[in-house]
Length: 117
Image (spheres, one colour):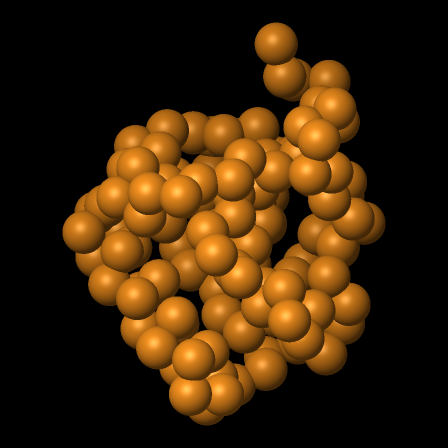
């Protein structure tokens, strides 16, 4: 994760299709993150008008296990990445790409950056 000093609000999803559609079809403020099961997708983009890049963290280990450029994905291809990560996570076979600890995030959605409405 490049922007580990950001503080994030998090939107939790129980429906994977809804999360994938939201991430791939919308340009999000830099303080947004998304959670599905034990994975958190932190917006690691350089700006709101650039490529949507997401650092993926495993909650159990608190480590980054992937980085996905959502701007290059359809909702379906993003979903495939997530399902692959969940399968690796279940087997304990994911590769930790960053050993830095997970960024600060607010599960109560109280934090917003200056660009949030």
